[in-house]
Amino acid sequence: KAQPERASSVGERTRDTMASGGPAEWYNSLPPITRFFGTACVATTIAMEFNIVDPFYLVLDWGMVFKKFQVWRLVTCFFIIGGFSWNFLMRVILIHNYGVGLEKGVFQFKTPEFLYMLLFGALTLLSISLALPGFNLIVLNGSFVFMLLYVWSKHYPTQSVSIMGLFQVQGFYLPWAFLMINMVLGGSPWQDLFGILTGHFHYFLTELNPNTRQAMEPPEFVHKFLAWTKTGHVSPAYAQRQGPAGGVFRGRGQRLGGN
Image (cartoon, rainbow, N blue to C red; front, side):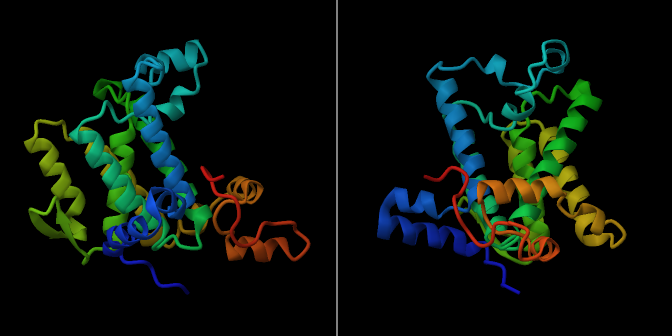
């Protein structure tokens, strides 16, 4: 079994890659799922900043989803960070450090499990938004990123992390540290808390409760999608079920967002 990549090495590897091959090589070295998500967030921000698209058509509006069948809102609401700002920079850094840290770490060679975790988290957050309209959860990027942050913290609880070079905390306390920073800066804690709740829900079902682990295995369509797009690594258990004649993609190939 491959050893998870230490999250602290993500920044070091980024600097080494940038120094040796430049931005293009660094971008292509990112794992496919995190690269696609990060690219979508940056592209959405650029489109909004230059008035290419009106944010009104991207936010989660359940009335528009049900009455006008604008189902794309169920996806685009996860890509909205806002305009170019300090918050945008911090959000991109979080996506890079902890999305890459998970996908190259505990989910290394487990692309289906990583993608299914993201789908599970997205569906959970959408359900919370629908069930609790009073919280006005029309943009879910912050909650989604906090879900990633929380899952990372559970897998790296003793990892020492520097926050903006000002102080260090252990990985276990990292989501709560960022939550407190957000509150000190005047932000609402609810989106962050919903992300933490969603991350804990997934972690409980997949790691803490043995009775639900099998039920949380990626469904067939996730494996087939990744095999069809030749993205990431096929699950060994799924490949074994398919047999040598199953036509399942093995190894690595074209990545999401790649050329």
